[in-house]
Image 1 (cartoon, rainbow over the protein chains, first blue to last red):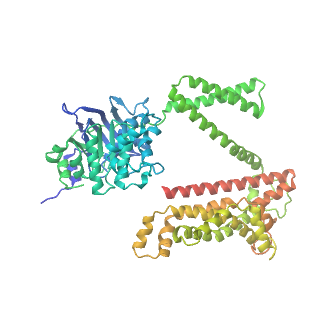
Image 2: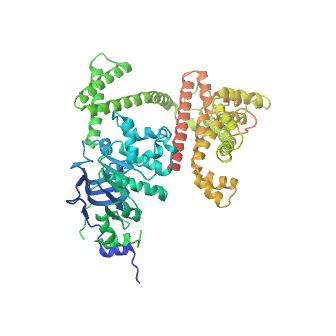
Image 3: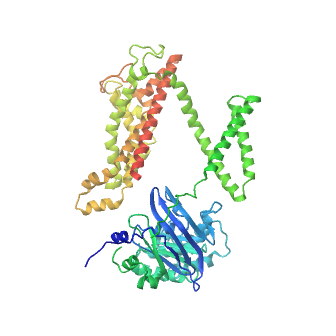
Length: 284
Length: 346
C-alpha cells in the first residue's frame, strides 16, 4: 500500500490556502453572536493563522481540533483578545460579537473578556485566595457588586460540579484541591461573571481520566445555558463532548480552517479527505 | 483553489500613531510656551522654569481632560500620576549624572587615561598627568577581590540551594547580616587583622576589604539564580546515575553560567566606588605599584578623594573627571550585567 504523507497530499491538492468559511448555526441552532471574518494571526513575522471565517452556534459545544501547531489555540485566544498579550503578535480581519468588532477602536478589551471567559490548560486558581474568594474573584476584580455572594458561590460551584466536594471547606486555600477540582474551581470562577461564551484551552490535558470525565460532564451541562468553545487535541474527547467541530491544519505554513460541521458528520462522513484522515487517526 | 490575498498584520491594541504624535506635539508645545513665558516675563532661573513648565502642563492637562469621557479621564488620571512620579524619581539621577558629566568632561583628555601623577603635581595644567595608576590600581584590587569572593559566593549559593545542609539557616543569616556591614567596619577589620600585622597598606589588604563587602552580594545573587534552575534538570541528571556533585558541576552551574557572571559583575559594581575601606587598607600612591603584597597602591575613589582634599581649581577638576570615569565604569558594568542576565530568561 502506498502511503502518502499529509503534506504531500496537501501539496498535490494545493488547497491549503483555500478560504474556508464555515457557518455552524442553522435554523435549528441559533447564532451565538460570535463570529470571525477572515481572521489572521501573526507572531512576529511568523504567520500562524490564515483567513478563518467561522460563525458559532449558541448554547452548544464547539470543538476546535487539529494537530499541534495548527493554530487552534491561537484562534481561541484571538476570540477574547488574549492574543495581544504575546509580544510582537499581530492580527488582521474581524472578530464580531453581536455585530461589533471587538478589535474596534472604542471597544474596552476588559469588558469583552468579561463577556467571553476563558479556562486555561493548567488549572490556575489564585493561590492566595480561599475557594470562596476564588469563585467571586472575577466580580471583585471587575468592581461588580452583588447582593448575595453566598448564593452565587453555591450556584457557580454547583454548575461546575464542585459544590458537594467543597461545601464544608469553602475557606480552604484553592491550592489544597486536587488538579481536577482546581480546574472545576477555575470553571466556577469563570461562570461567576456570567459570560456569554466560555473558551477552554485544552482544559483536561493536565488531568487524569476520572477528572477529565467529570469536567466533560460539566461542559455538557454548561452548554445548556452558554456557548462553549473548546480546544482539544484529543479526538475522542471532541467526539464525546462537542456538538460541532472545526478542524484546523497547517502544512508548515499558517494554520487554516479545513472544515467545520456537526461533530457527527465530521467523524462519520467529512467532506475533506484531510479531515477524514485526521479523525481516523492516520496522522496527528 | 483560490489564492487568498493576505492582509497586512495589524495591532489594534497598540496606541495609534496619531495619538503618539499628538502627545509629542503637546509636550513640545509646553516647552515652547514655557520658553516664551520665561523670555517675556519676570520668571528666570531654574525655579522660574520649573514653575512655568508646571503651570503650562496643568493648563494642557485641563484642556485635554475636558474632551475625555469619564472612563478615559479615570485612566488618564492614573497615567498622569504614574508619569509624574516617574519623572520625579528620575530627576535626582539626571541631576547627579548631569553635574558629574558637565564638571568632569573638562578634564577628560587623552592624558587622563594614559599617564599618572609621578612627575605632575595636582595644580599643573589639566593636559599634564592623569589617573592611569588609579585605574590600574582599582582594576587590580577588584580582580583580586573577585578571585577571592566569586568561588566563595558561588559555593555558599550552592550550599544553600543544592546541598541544603544543616547550617543553611546560619549561612543565610550570616550572609544577610554581612550585607549590612558598613564599609568602614570592613576596612577596620582588615586593618587590625592584616594591614597592621604585616607591611602596612597594600593592594592585597584593599582587596580583602573589598572582598568582605562583595561576598554577600555575590552569594545572594548566586543563590537567586541557582533557585531558578528547574528541579527537572537535577532529576534528569540524577536519574542518569550522576552523583550530586557531578550534577551540580556539570548540569546546574553551566545552566546559570550567565547568571553567575551577572552575580560577579553586580558584586564588582557594589565595591568599585568604595572609598572608606581603601583609605585604611590600600593607601594612595602617585604611580602604579606592581607588588600587591607590599607598598600602598592608588585607586580611583581614593584619587578623587585626595584631589578634593587638595581643593585647588585643577585638583578639583581632576576629582570630577575621576568621578566621571568611575561612574561610567559602573554604568558599563550594570549594562553588561543586564545584558547577560536577560540572556538566561530569554
